[in-house]
Length: 371
Image 1 (cartoon, one colour):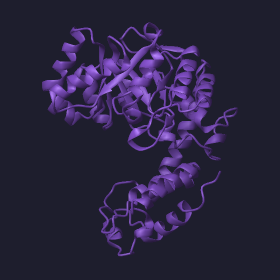
Image 2 (cartoon, helix red, strand yellow):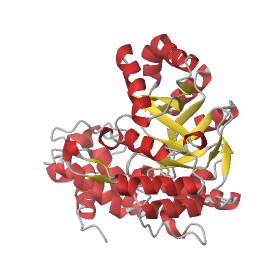
Image 3 (tube, helix red, strand yellow):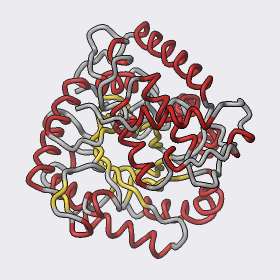
Image 4 (cartoon, helix red, strand yellow):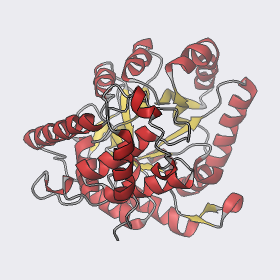
């Protein structure tokens, strides 16, 4: 395993982190729980392979992830950097209760990396800076947490705003080959000594499939998930790439990739960036995702349909695109709900023949998913 500094925290962290969001489950509905017989051996195998960073949260795995992680940590606590999150922004009592519950479920005396879960700049200004920051500092003074951090879901400009406050030690952000909008903020975080943890390195599973377009970009790397993980780790500003592993095979494959010190050579990363840049420009020729076409009177989610269509025809990610489209159709937001009123075309600044392209997208995205 290769290790990297986590900003100025003093921690040396494995470049692969275990994201405990997609642990195998047993049971159905509200009674579903983490399958300990599968999950704990997976976590232990990751630890044995050198992983020393694990991330969980209150709501993961039907609120059972923290308990499972706590059981897996027994006898290993002093060797593992533990990250979890607090989703509360309004009620101070609930915030403290979440922290106390997390400590109990994880069976630990302290949490290394404690995050405001899902921070946005507006939340920071309204809730964190005037109120919750004081609770974080108090918890740190009491030794209940070691470092104040956040998981971030907002624009690059607002990531820069959060970094510039000097409040956080580590930030967890979305970053992958298909979503690079936070690269400037990630670079600034690294420059300021803020550790960068990446969630979604395989784009929520979209890059966890095959693609004739992407799997030929780098000689010797034919698996798209491996390419995606190497791309993220080739960014020197990234400390940890979290992988939401749900099978032992995922663990073994990720350990093999992240035990290689060379993620991607500079020329390989440059080639990928150039190719993805061309694809992005091509995508913009079809639809820029500006959203002027919505709301649709029939609730057709036009930007999302076109985004999935582009993932298929430009990136070759048809399986994941079709699965996502099937979900849209199930919610009544697919192109099949279009009555061809033309209202969207009147609002489109690119003069896209939306009605025609919706038909094309529906035909392509409704085909049977390849197996």
